[in-house]
Image 1: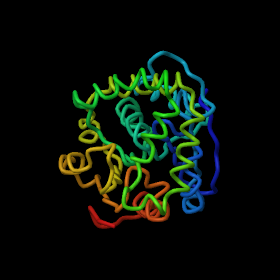
Image 2: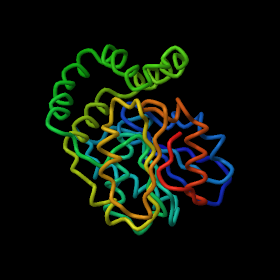
Image 3: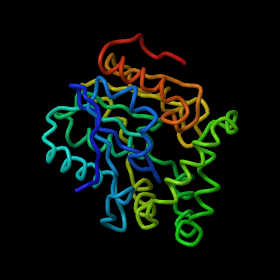
Length: 260
């Protein structure tokens, strides 16, 4: 069973999935803004946080099955699902397999596209570095996930992100990298999903092709997108704004495609 924590007092249930080299602690800054209207189920994905490493490869489909096992165990019924980065990839795999249990799907600084060949090759080359020099991999890579224009302001959050990444099991990191490399294009999930779909992206995100993601969204009334002035980690860079969008979008309605 995946490790998880539950907080909040709201009637609506929101399952939160962190990204690569993260754990359920990443939601701390957003949590106060969400806890009134949502009951939050914060999850450690396989090989991250306190959840164990299962296999040499943790595919997004495997992660989706583990999430389903947990949500069934908790008897959540219908719920909202939000995934950051890799958590978004797992969320898409979940929505593909189990759409009937979802009220909404939020891609939080994530994309529905598979890796292109260049990105896949980058991930393959990272295997040896992760095995042999993981500390260097974290120290070099994590700062690039934040808005380069505000690194001085975000220094504390960057250090926290490094600390969380360094606490992640190396085998779990490798299993996740291999799983992300194998993932397929899931634009069809957005085309077929009938629940509310929310895309929150960052102008300065170096990990996701934001322009391609937003430009190619299906033209459906249930899909809304937001572009924020931040990097890949809106939960640390713009927690209040991100939470306001989530609260308002999942509980009410706003005009489409706003820019903050």
